Length: 85
Image 1 (cartoon, rainbow, N blue to C red):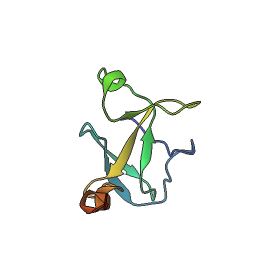
Image 2: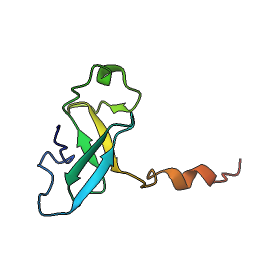
Image 3: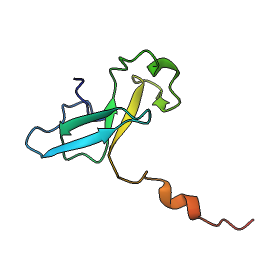
């Protein structure tokens, strides 16, 4: 199993209860973490280099954001936003 890493680079906390995290591609990891999301930097799957969910920050390694299962996307509330022209 692949371990998730926090965006800050440290290992996920081991004293927290297990949480199931899901990547944009649908893969899931069960990890002990209190984080709201994790960065998967290993990119070990063959489709990772062309995955539309991959993030490539300047000056850092590419990663995929892992979010707890059944947690709304952080920008989900913007879907109903009515912006006047």
